[in-house]
Image (cartoon, rainbow, N blue to C red):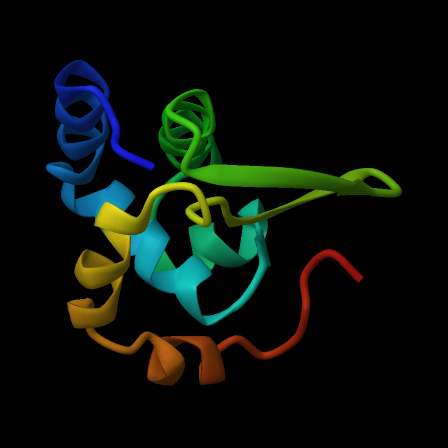
Length: 105
C-alpha cells in the first residue's frame, strides 16, 4: 500500500528520536511491558510511557492488556517502507538477556 507523503513524513519524524528508535529495536525482538523497557533504557517510566504513546498514536505499536499490565508490540504489517529500517537496526538480544525476570509476572 502506498502511503501519502504526509503520513510518511510523520512516521519518519517518530523514528528520528533515539529513544523511540531503540524501543522499536527492542519490540522487533519481542513483545515487552513498560517496566522492562524502563530497565533496559535506564530511564523513567513516565519518559518511556510518553514515547510509547507517540508510537501508538503514530500507529507503530500495539498494546495488549494482561491483568494490570500492558504489553507493547510492533504494528508495521501495513507499513512495508519500515521493514528495511527495522532490518538494519542493531540486535537488542544482549540487552534482553540482561533482564533478570519478567517484572510484570
